[in-house]
Each structure stands twice: as structure tokens, then as C-alpha cells.
Image (tube, rainbow, N blue to C red; front, side, top):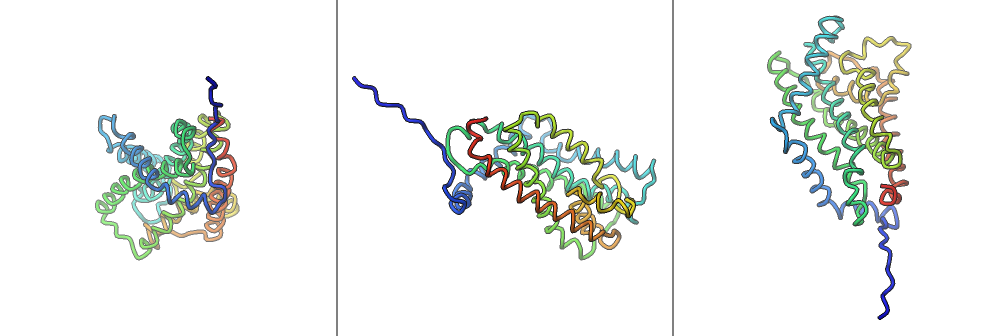
Length: 277
């Protein structure tokens, strides 16, 4: 008997960019499945479950309020310091969690990458959705603080979805970079926690951007999260806080740049993921 020749299985993405983006819609059910699976896995084996999404940002807010508001006595823009901190903690926690989830998402789903074709963008994007669920749950703390301090936002709160969209863009853009780099260079599993920790201190989470000297504003605004956080505070705190619009524009331009280049680099490396991983 003559054995039939063995054929290699080649997993190839859509041949054109147009076909690839159509495939994202065709595989939307996989996106829903991965997002829901990750949400369940995150809290399934924890003793207090979803309460972790409330405890971590709340304790961080307490520490920042004591250190910056009480001990350092930094200005609070005329609002209770816990609200000032938590209005920044929401987008920062979302961004930091998204980076951590995205950076490991391709490694965790390595078995899928080597077996079937689907647009690989689905994996890191679904990881961002898991972090967004934490964001929504943590928002209950902010509502509680507003009720406790009898704080009522003005019409600017209607602009909050815009700044949530910008936070999404920042999280997905940076997450795509780190997800692709982590496949090629496993050292990034150690670099990402450092980026998150360092970013927390150079972002206006525990303090207001108003304390940054004028001559350092543009350099300070090179941090993409500055525009996101200042935007959140402007929407939530209303006229009680001011935005440096030049720095805000620079910061959000960098968010757009990170998003576009993140998609470009991810798509460029996508064909090699199954081989390298």
C-alpha cells in the first residue's frame, strides 16, 4: 500500500485588509464567547468573587487620599479629595488592567492560535472587555461617594462617554503593542508590571494636573493617560476643574497614534504568532 502524502495545514488570515475586517464581524460570536469566558474565569475561584473589583480601587483611593490629600495637603479643586482621586482611579484602573490582560492574552490562548483561523485581533480586544466590566463595577463606588458627599455633577457629565471611548482607544492601542511584543519577546511579562507601576506615579491619579508647573506641561502631557484622566475629571467634576487644552490635545493625539500604530504592528506580526508561540 502506498501511504498518502502528508499535507501541511496552513492557517492564513484574510488575503486583503477588506476581507480581514469583514472577518471580525463574521467571528463576533467568538468575541462574545472569549469575553464571557474570561469574565467567569476571573472571579470563579475567588472567595469573595466580584467584590474584588470594588475592594482594590477603594483601598487605593483611601491610601492616595491620606497620602496626597491629608499628609501632603495637595489642592483638591474645591471637591472632596476622595472624589477627585476616584474620578481618576476609574480610567487608570481600566487602562492598567487592560494592559495586563492584553499582554498575556495571546499566550493564554496559544492553543487556539495554532488550530483554527480567526482574526487574532479578537483575543486582545476581548481581554479589554473584561477590564471594562471591572470599570463598570468600580463606578458604583464613585456613585456612592457622590451620594455620601452630596455631590451633583453638572451638564458636563453627558460628555463622559466620549472620554470612555478615548480610554478604550488608549487601552486597546497599548494592549495590542504589548500583546504582539510579548509573543516575540517573553521578557515583556516582567516589563508590563513595571510599566503599570511607573505609569501610576506619573499620571494624575493621586493629584491634580494643576500642580504641574507650566514649563513642564507639554512634557507631562506626553503621557497619553493625562488627557484621559483630565477628561474624566472635567466631565465628572464639572467646572470645578480646568483642562490645559493644549496638553489635552497633545495627549489625545498620542492616544490616536498609539492606537493606529498598535493595530499596524499587531497586523504585521499576526501571521507569525502561530509559529512563534
